[in-house]
Amino acid sequence: MRFLTWLVTNAIALAVAAWMIDGIRFRGPVSGQAELEEKIVPLLVVALILGTVTALVKPVLQLLSLPLIVLTLGLFLLVINAAMLKLTAWFADLLDLGFRVDGFWPAVGGAIVVTIVTWAVDGLIGSDD
Image (cartoon, rainbow, N blue to C red; front, side, top):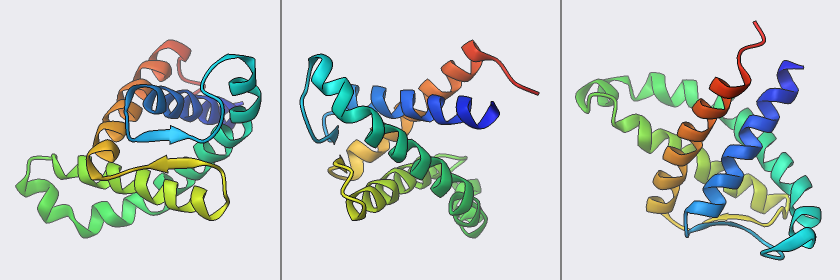
């Protein structure tokens, strides 16, 4: 059950980021039932990729960039989160999922949106612990 809530939380956060940030998008229809039917599976797969990349790559990057994180009082974590979103888009492109992040600033904005939405959804759903 915990895995399912984690996956849905990531998917909601990615959907909100794609809706709010101009440079983040999924390929396909932009409204109606067709949009939902065509984008739900890629959205869940991209959420799985983002979670996997965040779980495996992000701790290594945080450890390697610890002095920079301390020097910038934690603001460099935004750059790391943006890099995780760009890496997710790269993997999604390899799998032809139709997920794009068009540049550094959309990635930073998307990372902020994903972080806030994940925090809010986790607060609403509650913890499984």
